[in-house]
Image (tube, rainbow, N blue to C red; front, side, top):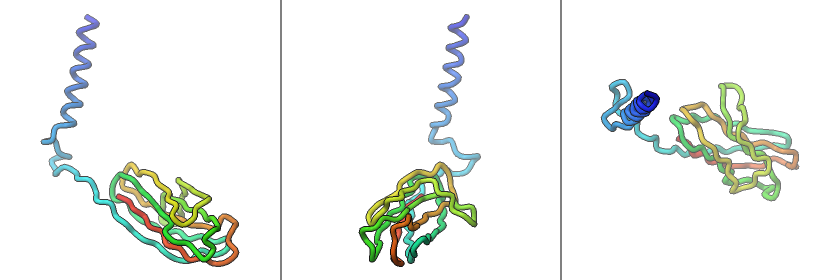
Length: 140
């Protein structure tokens, strides 16, 4: 009798799994969701001594998020902070952080659902003057 119950449970599980993979199955009668094409956004500005800049953006679905410090200068040899986080409309809650970023460095993570996100660049105590920058963000 134990084998029969175990076999029925396994078959039930496989049937539910197979139904989830049926290409004819849709979301409540809607058309199937297609993957979102990645979006590239560029942000630029100036970061001052002990300063920071935050830029908000919206991921439209799940996927990989990558922020790259494309240009930074004139203090090209000095490090700054580069972070990706969640944005609540007021503040950037930093999640992925690199406190040793220079031009060409990326911070990469993933987002599970559509989300309000942010990228932040900040002085980690090394800058002696204002520096201009460009950050490129690729997101779903």
